[in-house]
Amino acid sequence: MNHQTILQMARAALGSRVSDLCSRISMKTGVMAAALPINSVCFAMRPGSAAGIDTQVAFVENLRLQFTCITPFAVPVTAGRSLVVSGGGNSPATAGGTELVKPFFKQSGFDFSIFQQNIGGDVWISNTAALVGPTIKADNKIAELALSGAGFAGSTVEKTFTFDDPIAISRINSSYATNTDLVIFNPVAMDAVGTWELVVECDLVQLPGNFPLP
Image 1: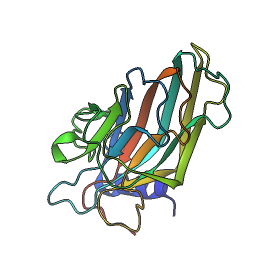
Image 2: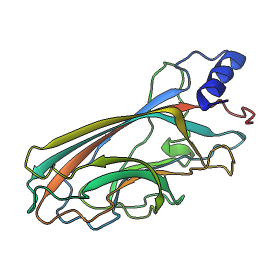
Image 3: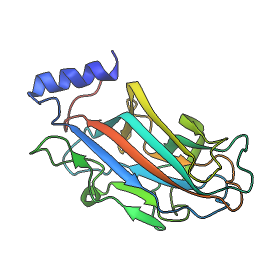
């Protein structure tokens, strides 16, 4: 049984409308400083944990990244230049960026997300430098945006990653959701001189509270 089937069962059993449990995160970095060191995290999201709710699992259905080069890199075409989406090490960003208060809810009346600030959710994006706090799992790659040829001013690379089996994220210790974070980082150092910005858009579906997991 895949994740999507479980979500459909949850909605049917609990009488939820399709969009009741859906939300979106949309954020943009500032102009990132040149020569960003290797493994710098520019986006990080970690779910919080609400009291009295045992099941707190969200699924990433779609993730859109849009990279734009602002100031040209010293070497415009560099093999290996990219941004990687991966699981993180359950550490929130604590400084160096902008924090999201709560996601956008797709259905009026549904206003609870495990990623919102007031229950301990952490969603941060960089202003000009790497976020301070989150760790990466370099061997836990989910997706990669190749930027090898995007070092000229005005170069734009856009990609929407759609997961047929959505990526499960949970703060709780669950065999069903192995990821406790989602982070975006550069696996190689960004070349000298070049600056850039990144748009991150993430579509989420959340399981109802206390929904029994298989």
